[in-house]
Length: 232
View 1 (cartoon, rainbow, N blue to C red):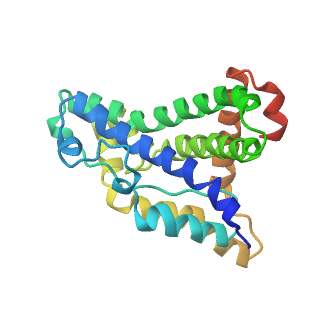
View 2 (tube, helix red, strand yellow; view 1 turned 90 degrees about the horizontal axis):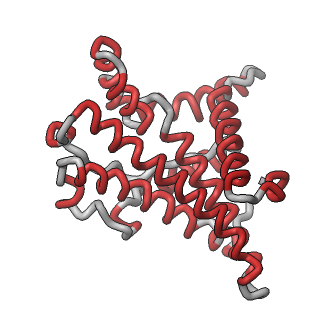
């Protein structure tokens, strides 16, 4: 698979913005709700270098790309949050977790609105800007959907732990140390094993891809870009 410098140039900026705002949002909301851990460690920052995880941000997406996975994902360094410091730990954990995906939805909406300014761009750079906007929309939709999977330490898992009654929340919370291994098994190992036996065991990627498409279509509709829906 040949990836040109142009391809990289229209992906790098949207990826860095999406993960930086996502992680900074977690830290900012935690700070506002009583926990200063991320704030004191400098993680409430728009500097992407503070959030990039070598494996999750670079290696894992590359592995999925070369494995021809239908659904690419990655993650940044988790923002440290001491939930015991929050004003209302169980409920505030939900708001801290939701901050990241909601920020990605807001970025997707901002991207949708930015499409309307494309006619004002110089002709020489309009296509490059358009490609950045398309990729920004896709990346933010993917991050919002993927992170809401109900598996700790993903945001959806922490939302579930915060909302479920204690008898259900505790077993789910205990999965957190194994969460990434579970995701890799579901999204990489299982499909590869299935392909060896002629079976399609990639249902999770299909579900995530379908939900991502719904988010993209909704954003385009809400931002008055219905004419772009056929190209999304």
